[in-house]
Amino acid sequence: MTEREKMLSGALYQAGAPELVRARRQAKELCRRFNLEAARDPEAGERLLRELLGAVGEDVSIQPMFWCDYGCHIRMGSHIEINHNCVILDCAPVTFGDHVLIGPNCGFYTAGHPLEAAARNTGLEFARPITVGDSVWFGGSVAVLPGVTIGSGAVIGAGSVVSRDIPPNVVAAGNPCRVLRPIHPGGVEET
Image 1: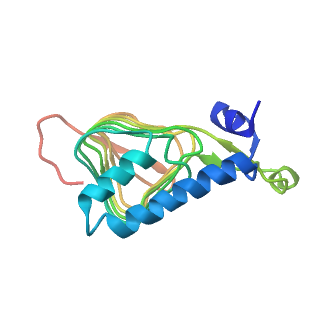
Image 2 (image 1 turned 180 degrees about the vertical axis):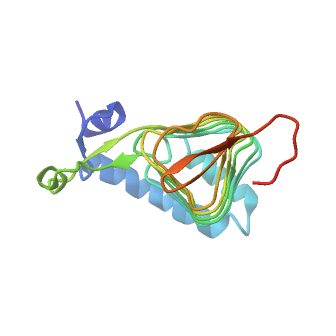
């Protein structure tokens, strides 16, 4: 099994394997070009996103600076707004539904490291997928950790660290992020 296959299966893998280093370098170069070109030439930015990401729906707006590890493991639905300084470490699949709003300085991190120092010092990592449903809103500076699923209609408060699954149609916030209350259909509420 290659290191890439191990990574995608959730097994421990060597992040420094040459094939993974090459893939990350290629993605970083596309990110660099996107960050330079997207503001002055939106069409060029869109072309670069479609080259970088695994799937991109319609009406996807990503503001610079945007960084990811591989890009090809990111799947975006349609009508997505991502504000400045987003980082997606896509060592495992990261999937966004439709109508997702992401505030500035947010991070989605599929990569993790062994807790035991000797294993961690060998360069081993693991990766767990992140899944975001439809119509989810992330406030600024949210961190989503490996293996988390966020249900459709959820609102994640600014500064939250999401370390476990969040059900649909709730307001959740904090470190660690926890459900604060349900969102009632048809109501106009403030967070």
